[in-house]
Amino acid sequence: MLDRITIIEGDITRQPVDAIVNAANSSLLGGGGVDGAIHRAAGPELLAESSMLGGCPTGEAKITRGYRLPARWVIHTVGPIWQGGECGEDALLASCYRNSLALAAAHGIHTIAFPAISTGIYGFPLERATQIALAEVKRFLDQDASIEKVVFVCYGRYAYPVYIKAAEG
Ligand code: AR6
Image (cartoon, rainbow, N blue to C red):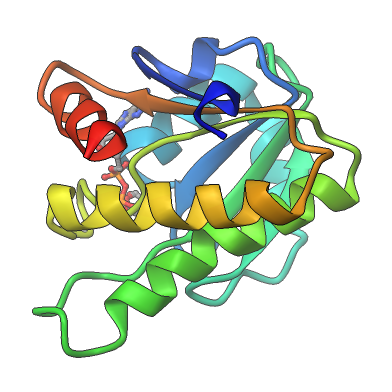
């Protein structure tokens, strides 16, 4: 299983994969963090397409083309805003990973890169989010053979050792 999961430090907008996942907000109209970086790198066509999608509820995912990105597709998912952990945040974050992967499989996508959804502006504690991300991706890969590679892209030095520790533990 772990041979289909890669953990790297880097910038998700540079990843040569079939699809990258965007940690969006429910408007799908762009924002800061990784969302802003993806829109800048993809060009204005991405906003033109994503603004036609009617938004996206928390925990769900929608797909657009990647335009000027190396990735052909962008899967936009909306993570939960951290409110202390008693408001269903864990389950909603798990749904982001599950629904993104299901959408990828439905589009014939074989390689996909994820950022650490909700762990920036939305304030989800990184260790807890990492455990959920890894568990959910492993569960999905267990019952789906079509996804060949999942890359967790850690931005900056802080997240990378947290992912490595969670993957080993
Ligand atoms: N590549 C990979 N990861 C990145 C990059 C990048 N280029 N840039 C940031 N990250 P955040 P959220 C990491 O805040 O918490 C937006 O305004 C970052 O270090 O981007 O889900 C949306 O529109 C962190 O680990 O997303 C929403 O309003 C992770 O990406 C809101 O922020 C997620 O941080 C979503 O907040």
